[in-house]
Image 1 (cartoon, rainbow, N blue to C red):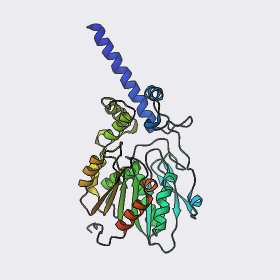
Image 2: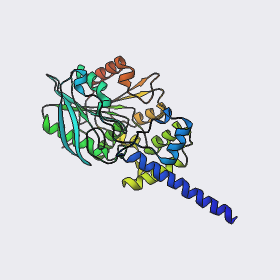
Image 3: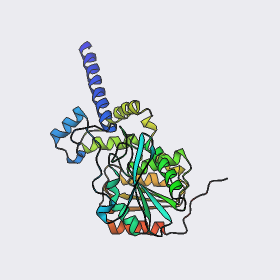
Length: 321
């Protein structure tokens, strides 16, 4: 019996050490080394190594810029949660609106160039933002959208001050969408419209989905990873639930989601949508996973977004004075 207790204690320590290392890898922006591939692209042996060593996620530089798509742009810098944020502003002649674009987990603003090009063709100026530690923005870690929500607010305030004649539209993919949702919890988001693409519902579920993608049961590792990640980042990850923040949105919302999304099942995306209390539209993209829907289905994406943004019957709630 004594040996059994010791064995359980040793196993408990080992599991927690692994969870601690995993949590560090998931939130810390590495300074060097090869970037860990997506779980779906790893061999069984590579998955084992990742489980033991943790992931390695160095800052991914922006590949390409608006000029590679024939669009003139300006670089803008302003203060964010971890230092200077950098963004690209793509002007559109005659535009009275600017779309603020927020990227996904450990991605960067260049990964949203296809979306920005389509917004520009539809007649909108664009402000493409690098979250802290991504692309050209300063930062040493990611909080998976929690603290990035304040960067959404900083970007929104910057856009209002820099282009006061333009109204604002918010667009976010995955973590970017989750950051927008938490920003709505923090402040009254008085913007014209909001577009959420593939938002995750809770931090615990999105962490669990990564283990499932590796063929590993999420319990108890996902819970331990969120626990240790919470200690690293200084917030309670178990209460980080964008699905609940959806109730705080005050502007018309378009939500888009792939029917084959394995990171965020369609049924959970629909549950998030049910929590939205303002004018809302949900569009499912058949055969698409957790990926850029604009890249996979550009015509459907463009038509969906165009119809939503030009629906004059949808108007944001105004804050009581």
